[in-house]
Length: 174
Image (cartoon, rainbow, N blue to C red; front, side, top):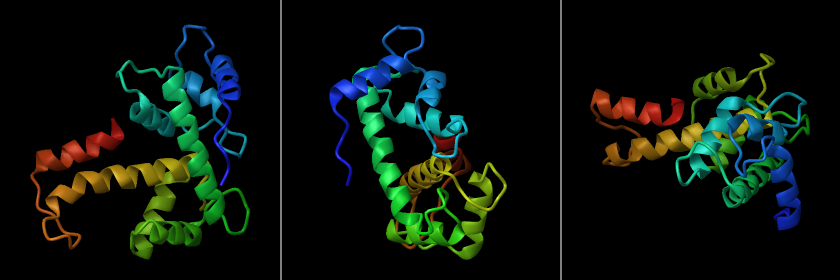
């Protein structure tokens, strides 16, 4: 496991990312500061989702302390991604994604794994890059957390109203 980055190094990354020098980073600045490992911009949807997770004051930006937490979160996901990228291709295929989700405690059908792979594969090559892997896993976790209160018998089935379903869906897409 990689050690957390030193505060001075994180401060330098933060200051470089803070393009306008206002002491906080918005989604566009954060996108430029992150690397997905395939030389394309970090998925803006992943950036926005993570920003919302770490923006404690709901300002739409993150300050340095929030950035440190987010950066360490990304580092932990990178280690996780590398553990499941068994062929060291820099991407996750359906087989590797199945293994990852099984390790996380999920048992998804091959059809659902294909759906996730297609939905989160921006390159249309049948694989998922690091940033899209983070987005897919975060979406599954958020939706699982929204689903659980309605899965009374803990059997993977829930009864909920349409509005409750929309509330869960909007927690991911908005």
